[in-house]
Length: 321
Image (cartoon, rainbow, N blue to C red; front, side, top):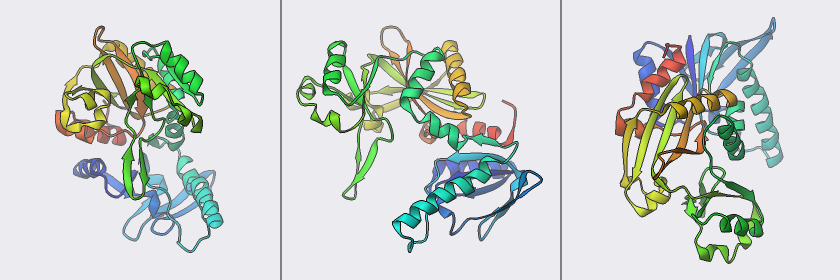
């Protein structure tokens, strides 16, 4: 049986998992969806109600019947011939998504980590918050709005402070430069002129008076909780703003958090996720922030020794936890 890995070409965690699977003697077919249709060829025929055929590149071929599991690790978008018009490109993208993606999604008895449809649903942070709450995880007051009046009302009701967070990836490229939108606390001056709020949907949340934060990495039945301690002002507000100021510790997951996380994963149909929490200073309570079904873990593994790569290889090959 073969593990199909769909990932970007330059990705160190993927390289590590491929090396681990190869060391175990497991067949691996790795590709990026950006290779389709020019470098990646699908030849699939419906026979007796099942898709048969192959997925191939110039160097490798895998029989669709031999695919045991698929690791869908945030691959790149399809890339089409440059001579297509904008309209043709949009049509080609739709057909590739529904045809190429549809055949893979229809393969029977295949473990997805994660299925693209489940991962797409799980991207919606409002859904994440309601799901987390329903599963027993603690969430803080949150506002979604495009109304400046609503933002002022929300902030006035929370004397402990309010933060602004992006709904999606927090990076944009403008003028050839990458810009990052970190989580940021509203200052009194920010509430004076909120005209920009009318431009799109905004997410505001109550500030969590946290001692430390944690990322919980879930791989099937395995769970690794890494406490992240911020040692600078910028990192305390958003630890992604100052990685040099962080220290890490692998700890046991509190039973009530583990139970809530497992319920969350079942509810959203996920096999893998990285969930972020703040840990309150006074109570030690874990406060759910968000989850990422393609969240990064490589640097946490190297910092703590958590055997995440091995656990992912176990999951993809069906080794019992």
